[in-house]
Image (cartoon, rainbow, N blue to C red; front, side, top):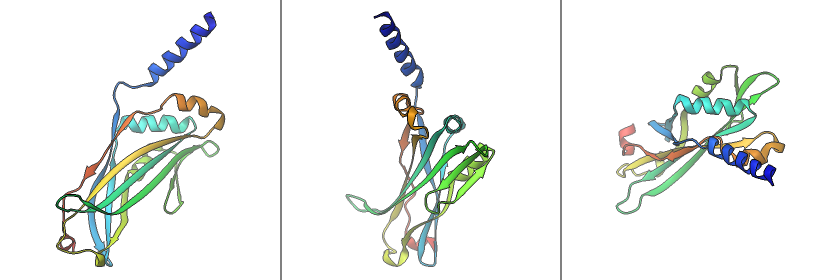
Length: 191
């Protein structure tokens, strides 16, 4: 009975120590939009602080695969309800290659790997996403008002299946997802 109580106390201490006092806020900022060959493109960048970078690095080095999920919504402004014209989902998978001792990021669209021995150099290249194809401008009315909403989320997956039970008990990083809205614009302003 005494061993059981000590085990319960240990589990409670582990759970309490793994929960931070505050959550981090993840933001995906809209940078700019432009038109090229009658296609609307957008550039976005992630606004994450160094503390989150350090946490991500620690988890990646421990064998946890980190997924950065980017979402860009293109909306038309309406009087009552805004109309969502397109949702774009992008993802970057980050893990540590223990054989080559490199950090690896895999692009979801192209499946290209980017490798670096310096984690911070690699993560900075992932936070800037340029030339995201959004919509054909031939299908848009130049008099309507449009805007973007952006969101960033993080998902974790344990690379070692036998540790999945412990990983699911202790949440590695507490964060809040923050939707950001761009300034409103008309398509004619981008030419």
